[in-house]
Image (cartoon, rainbow, N blue to C red):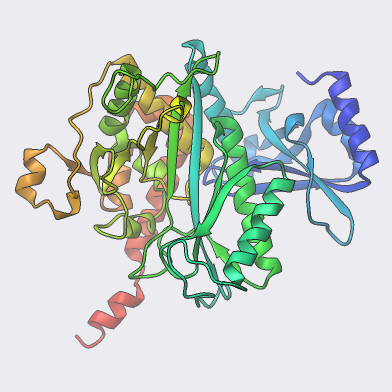
Length: 443
């Protein structure tokens, strides 16, 4: 519960910073950032009682006859935004969603992640993640024209791409998000900004803020930023490779074991085994759009095959090489998620699969250090290597039968999510694409 002192500090900050607009932000089921803005005169009542809103129009929330919902601000997320609105100062707080009576709403993605994290904490596990978000910058939303022709890690003096990433990075720093590095990615106009790893609930908040910031800075520079998984045919798509590790309450990395060849502990191997076993069930959450599966094809550095390795970047899960003295950096890199996912649900699903592996002591198969893209069907069979779903439709089928995902998301979200994804897939199946028109128009 919020203490009086905490509330008074926020109210005083609003006065000191001359804030005139306060944004209350939260996530819908698909991961879109939602917002309601209040004035400072409404702040005291909001901190005492929350802010009422109609949840019937929010994807995945309530039906119209049960739509009353309340936003409860998380005071630890208060910050003055580094941009103004109508020349006036703006602050922001991220909120939890509650039902009437101030009970957590089962359909709030932020609550779902907290619930899975609490389950882990009861076992002494603290889940940390470090996602790498890739994005494209185009000339406009309507015209997907490259704004540069650079490639991976390219740099040249007076390079606009370098300049705009610098603005994005400095803006994120002003928002309290530590940027580890930023660079140009493989495709023209494709970029990546990596932020410092943190506990998963904080990181999910930061992913939402990062996406908002990148889009805002791009728009201010007459560009359009997109996290669409595969916006351009023939080049790499946008991934969200996610580095994962588990620490104990003393901040010791429980994935590290100095005696193991890969420096992985038994706990890490079981976590790895759980993710490999259940990843097909998770795919509809980690790769949630029709377009996601245009990225997950052979080549283009996108993982398709369910295996793990250290050096092999065609593997689904990679174990970054251990460096002496950096035991805390021992981690597993899951390479299939893309930035169109809801980060709260994605991190919850990743952790749930890993915990299941630990609970059931699931042993992963041997690593595969060869380039799996070159394997034929017989060699894939020899190594017992399965593939990720090839389409959203296939991912939905795997998700639909998943007891793990039903337990992780809860009945409300599981059913709502399944309903939403089915509708998306059915709409796509009914649509006629430009590719079909070009290929079959002369029949």
